[in-house]
Image (cartoon, rainbow, N blue to C red; front, side):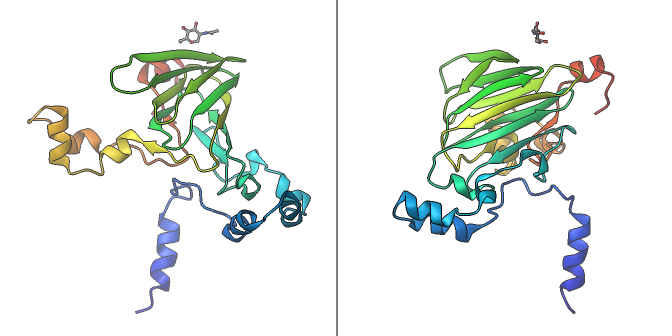
Length: 226
Ligand SMILES: *[C@@H]1O[C@H](CO)[C@@H](O)[C@H](O)[C@H]1NC(C)=O
């Protein structure tokens, strides 16, 4: 039997934003930019003005429902190849949060444009928690590899700009990755032999657009449902 009907079925069943990681839109262009010996060669490769322009709002992930992390990086914007930077727009709808995550290859500097978003960061074992309220014009640093999370406390949209010092930062969401380990090991790591780890982990949202709905306190205050 042909697999085509199955493929088509899968396309319809999968939510459109199921892909959690940035797909490389033009690997041949990344490769050519890595081959270019000089800046003149680079400009010849990027001779089209369009290659220098990145349109955040028209990216597939761009949403405030509940929110999103939209990256301009080597995968989504090949002109950044070799530049050593990613710029991300953080779009947080009312009460939206970025769940605990880290970037294995970049320090992340975030500045708020609008809203009131509380950020939390843990640098490594043995250091405390850093909390910063990111209101317009306030900036904070999430050092490379640090655990960080944030929540828009407000009932309106919040927007922040994130700069990272790699064009390929990587992101690891803690709960999603934790639950890839054998569940008896997770139970042991919690130090609770009776813990129902299957039950505890069954509602962990997919990475999706990078954002989920935040705390019950915020949702109640803003009259929203999960
Ligand atoms: C931002 O939200 C926090 C936590 O809800 C609050 O303590 C703080 O006063 C707010 N800041 C501003 C400027 O509204």
